[in-house]
Length: 344
Image (tube, rainbow, N blue to C red; front, side, top):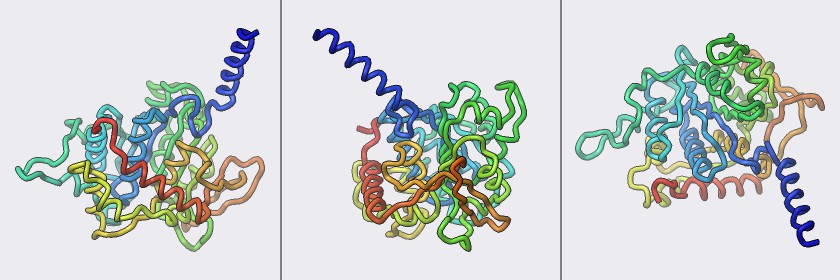
């Protein structure tokens, strides 16, 4: 009888695992995730990257690649610095050519960290790659990675412009797959999580949308999988504290995320965590947030975003209560200030 009980218990556990499989929280194993970022424009991208490396260390995700939608060599070199410093030097990097014009939009903290020198005048941070200019274009790297992925297995976290994703949808069959870009996404991608839009104030044209409005229209209108977006009004309620940057990293020596934060604005300042909230949902699911009913999202020619409820819709957006915002901030500080596995 005891043996029968044990067998039934094991079967129940297996069935429970099947029911939980493929959830955003990844109970069935690590999530295959691709990061899409305009890193260098706002320092919350660097915080989001820190979260991702900690999730890799914890076995919650396989970070398949970081794809960049900000022009220039510095963003790719900065991501290479991060990959190297956090102990994951082999994570692929995709870049963009002829992307959105954003060079003068903010202090390029990525470039500041890339240019940082030590006391001997040598680069302050180690690199792994030798030819950053030779990195592949992101929409091609997507095709290569998706073609190798299991069906319905990839989550994309997009916290910048939609340019690379729009280009991916437009790609034809190639040496990686006989499928078009849209067909490949529909077959391989389970979920797209974006940081984009503003559903409380349509007069506010959110930055990630307005920098490439045609691409944003394409993604919200034509992307063939479910999309969840963390809008402007979420991240602005969750501010990463300057006191943490100043006091919580004594263990690190020279830290690329901390140096990026210091370079971006005059310290001390708290910074909204627009991009980390999208990453948090992509990996940990809806336990931190309030998730809207299903519907459709449209983008106007000016860059406003509108949500229309529709029970057959595949778009949702996040919101937070004050209590949720405080809990998320505490969670971010706890994770970001933790020591990466390779530095313990």
